[in-house]
Length: 410
Image (cartoon, helix red, strand yellow):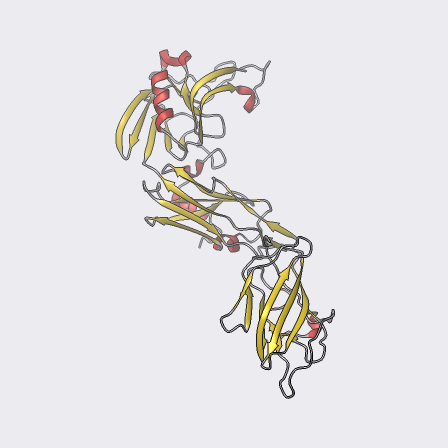
């Protein structure tokens, strides 16, 4: 049967015993007054041999344990024959195993929050007399469960500008505890850090671009951890990314040129037209954002519609036009793409609505060679700095400011 996941804290209710029955007792420091050993009924075996005491069983923990901690059942004066833990609501069994000497059973599954689990333990004493004992485990009902979602897919091939991130579905009060539960490793090793974008979102990047050929792994261990305000961590996530060759484009708004570098070598120069800086009708200035962008995705053919950012049909400056070889570099509608209407000024003037326009041949080349995570550095565009919330503007933040954005800074 499938296992239950999400996390648990146990209250183990104990049945009264029949003649020579199995005794299931709380561990040291745990008392009946704590509500962990209330009788609910039991079955007992035939009497054991004279002078041979019944086996006893103890469980470790209390009624407010971390969901990461396992259910542990231990036998004294005998051995465990079997322990089963099930969720009667789902019918799922909780996995676990006996120690080599059969005196200890330990669960190795996470449990659900706010659930009741039924436990059945059978043990035999030194005379071989078995006893069955039944009990319950009641799991913690938190005020909320904050579950992370990956900013990127769980695996994939990315450029050197890869930004890793997590988005939670609850506000995070104790950011430091949550951040400590994250682990990022890279091969080869590179210096990096976390930066909190808001109450629910946190990003990770290295000090400098990832090294080509790197493998980057992300693991969270927030599950079952109290993270403030009665909220606990939800199911953990993990991801593994491969960094491909270095592809970096440098677009200069003053020279109206875009240059492409493959592993540090210049391989392409193309004229371009960026967003216009003059306050001309009908829309006024629409400059391209300055700063380091990364490729977010590609579409060979797309209808560019100004209504996607609020300028809709009937408004001054509205447009809806098919465009080819589109490489998206921000969430604000910035692309590298073909635009045949601006070919005459590409390389000499910035007249676009914010995109980097090129002719067919050059746009197709960038479309074929630039992929997710590859870098497009824009300078001298006359526009504001790209923000962290506008695609992957993380690289526009200085390393000193990035470090200050960590909950563990200082």
